[in-house]
Length: 89
Image 1 (spheres, rainbow, N blue to C red):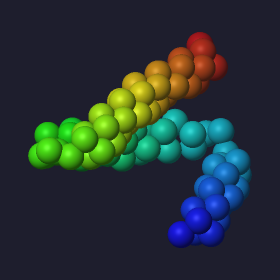
Image 2 (cartoon, one colour):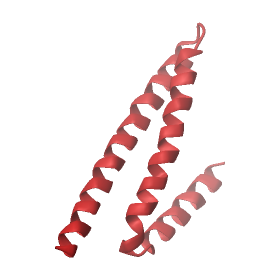
Image 3 (cartoon, helix red, strand yellow):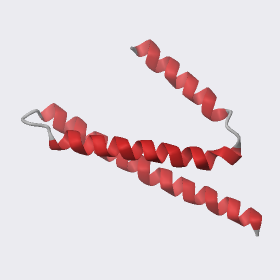
C-alpha cells in the first residue's frame, strides 16, 4: 500500500506539472466538486461514529481538511478567473 501511495504521489505531481495554464481553472473546479463529495462523506462519517472515539476524531479531521480544501480551491479559482479577466480588458 505504501508503494501504491508513493507511486500515486509521483504520478499526480507529473500530471499536474504538465497541465497548461489555460486548463488549471477547469481542473480546479472539478477538484472542488470532488472535495465537496468528500466533505459530505466526512460529515456522514462524523454523524455515525457510535461510541468510537477514533472514528469521531478521524471524521472531524476529515471534515476540517475537506472544508479547507473546498474553500481554498474556490479562492484559487476566483483569483485565476480574475487574472484571465484582466487579460481581456
